[in-house]
Structures are given as C-alpha cells and as structure tokens.
Image (cartoon, rainbow, N blue to C red; front, side):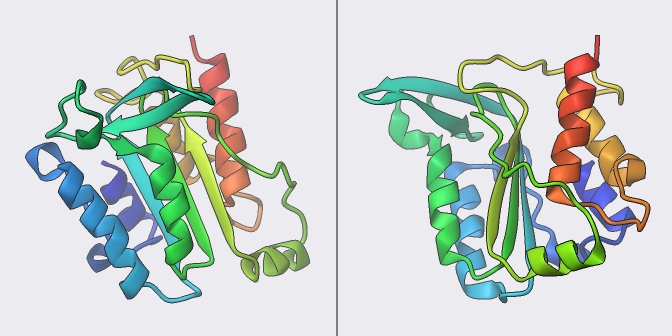
Length: 194
C-alpha cells in the first residue's frame, strides 16, 4: 500500500521503489537492497526506508538492542535478525543527503528528530543542503505496538495515519511535506487515537 501511495503522490517513480513482502522479505534480500543504495544513489536524492513487520529487543551490556524480524528469521538466533541500528549506521555509506527510516514494528526504538520547526523557503533551502538521517518508529524500545485497528482497514494505527499523512493531511500551505511535519502529524494522531 505504501508503494502505491508514493506513486500516487508522485514522490517516487515505480523504478525507484523496491517492494519486498512475504517470502521476498528475507534478511539477505533486505540487506542486499539496502546496501545497493551505496552504489546507486546520488547526493541530491532522498531515500525513504519503510519496514512494517515484527521487532524484538534483547538485553545487552548498555541496555536493550532493537532488531527487525525478517520473513526468514529465527527469533532465537540473533544472527538471523536485522539489528536495526546497523541500518542507520550503514546509512553513512549512502551518498543521499536525506534519508528517512519509518519502522512500524514493536520495540522499534525512539523516533530521532532534531525538533526544528519548518519555516520559510530559506529554511527549507538550507535544510536541503545538509545531510540528515531521521527515524520515525511506531513505538519505543520497550513498547509493543498495535498490529491492527488503524484508520485504514488492514493496517496498524501507525501505518493508517502515515498513509493519511502521505496523501496530504500534513503538508504545509506550500504543499511541502517535511520529515518533521510527517513525524509531528503521525505522533499526534497515534497518541490521540482510541
């Protein structure tokens, strides 16, 4: 569904979208497609990584470590899981200035953002020159999230509001969607959803 929304709002072209579901969403396939970005992406491109599925945490010396659970995972074997901060660390290898990670999975971790408020065209122009990696997750490191009951049938509360946002509910008056605007909209809607 997310891929169809991205195409309908003309954010990305069909050939720019990699869509892995069910048995195609293996650890190897996910990691392979992610690392291909290091070779295939230019500096001025914007990357969106969306994962909807299951997550888990494991205790470590310095606290909990979050993992994404791909299709072929064995939750008792950490080597079959995707350590979620490996994705954000490996994003340094990708030349794109802007990357947004959206994770709709239990124990996805805290959403990371700078808390800046979008303002004038000058602000947006300045932000487009900077490198950024932002993360929006459905839940905190110790939080189970709802798999259903969202505003759109067959989607979680988080993904339902995300889809509404991408369709235009959180755009600025100038029809610009910023990562911070997306985060604020989804956070507020999920927090108040009954």
